[in-house]
Length: 225
Ligand code: ASP
Image (cartoon, rainbow, N blue to C red; front, side, top):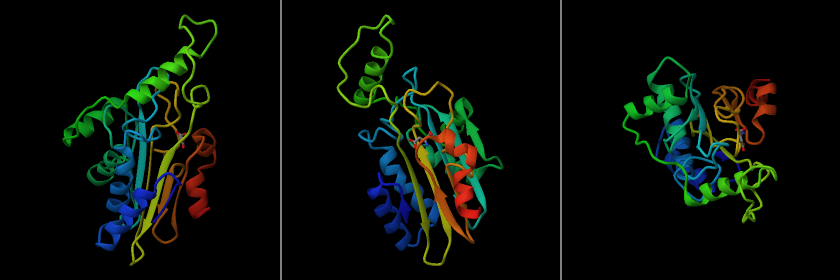
C-alpha cells in the first residue's frame, strides 16, 4: 500500500485488510475513510476546509484494476465519505462521474446521511479568511489564528494498493482547494489526473494544485505514459 504523506492510518488499515484477503479497492477506500471521518483532518471529508461560500464540496475518484472500472464524484455536499460514494458509482452504475446535487441524491439513495461537514475549526478558518480577504470589504478584520487563512492550503489523500496476487486499485479523496470558487472541481475526481490504475502496470495519484495536474493528465502519464 502506498499513499500520500498524510495517511499513515489509512495505509495501516488498507494493509491489514489486504492481508485478511480484502479486495484492493475495498481496502484503500476503507483506509482513506479514516481520514474522511476525522474532524481534525482539514483536507478531506468531514472538517475539510470549505469553498468561498463556506460550503464543503468534496471530490473523489477510484479505479479497480481487475475490473477495469472507475467511479468518481465532484462537488459533493453533505456526505462525509466521498471515496465511498465514488466506489458505489464504480460498482453499481454504467457512469463514471456524478456531480453536485445528483451525486448527493445518489449517495442518499444508498443510505448515506446528509450532514453538516463544517466543524467549529473549519468554520472559524473560513470566517477568518472572509474577514481578511479585502481591506475594503464590510467585514471587520480579525487576527488570523492560523497561518493558513489567506493562502489556500492544499491537502488530499491518494492511496494505492496491490494484493499478494498482483491486483491493483487506487483512490483519491479531497475537500479540494480551500476557499475555491463554488462549483470548482479539481483533479482528484478526474480519472487519469487525480488517480489512475492499470492492473498490468501500476497505480498513481496526485495531491497539490489540481489545475496544473489536469492539464498533463498526471496520473495516467505516470502509469501508462
Ligand atoms: N489536488 C487537490 C485539488 O486541486 C487539492 C490538494 O491536493 O490539496 O483539488
